[in-house]
Amino acid sequence: MGRILIFTGKGGVGKSSLSAAHARSSALEGKKTLLVSTDMAHNLGDIFSVQLGKEAKEIAPNLDALEIDPAYVMEHDFQDMMRAIINMISSERINASDVDVKLFPGVEELFSLLKILDIYESGMYERIIIDCAPTGETLALLKFPELFSWYIEKLFPIGRVVVKVLAPISKRAFKLELPGKKAMNDIERLYYRLFELQQLLKDRETTSVRLVTIPEKMVVEETKRNYMYMNLYDYHVDGVYINRILPQEVEKTFFDEWIQIQAKYIKELEETFSNLPIYRVPWFDTDLNGVEGIDRIVKAVLDGQDVFAIHDSIAGERYEENDRGYVMYVTLPFVGKEDVDMHMSGTDIIIKIGNFKRNIPIPNILREYSVVEAKLNNGELKIQFEN
Image (tube, rainbow, N blue to C red; front, top):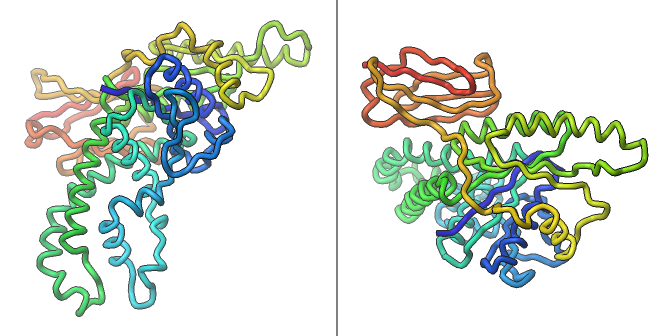
């Protein structure tokens, strides 16, 4: 079984360098490792001073790197499905060839993850290190497989009937081309691949999310929110990296106040994430480019640390039976009850926090039950079901 580490955090905190350092450390252990960027503003090539293309390229012994081009992945995999979608929204005024698939929010990022799934299943690599986009884009990326598969699950059975009944007359009568059997098969294949992708990304024995931060107020607050959202979507966060820590021995008084500010927020981070491994990363005196530069991070931070181990963390939703029926628990740290909107719709529990929403399908045994109350205490949402 392989190992996947996903690095995320606010833009500019050093995710790419730390991802690269972990990939390099893994390769030095003799593990065949792939370093992947899903950030559209790729910079792995800049870090290692190499030109990366659409396929993985060796940059050091046991270490390959890949900057995923989602448009390339879409064009070479799921062609029929994309063509069907384009034809459905095209008309006499809009030619299918003029429709850009980028009009579909999240589709490009989704295919980046599907590419990683393919690579993982190929067994070519023992470890895959993923350098993700800044926090907001990463959250959108990681919630998309669950959200998209939910829509397919709801609509696909209907879609099969619609295609069978209306496809012969739709183009002639309504100038609308419904997806054919081949495209529907591709959509069905996509659904199963999305299910497998969810299983992989939420497998706590395989995949971990690592948060990268720096000791500054705005970044610390975003890191807390990031952790809360990761728990909302049931991702396994098992490490925090505090980057760019100024050395205490700096003599110039200009840095005295900065060192005190950093000390304050380092303490806050260590108290907030006391249940997780925390790694301190110093502020280096030069740019860290090339293998030699990345090796400085490996030596200063990772050597002697079991950074590829599976670390325990707070679990996501879970269920318990009590004398009233069943209770569902959802971990939501760093959020107030006034920020949470929860309700039941059909066979789903819908939790909304700010602009983020998650639909949690309830187990079949609870389909005949109703939600009678919900309480948020100490970072845990407790939902009571009664029959």
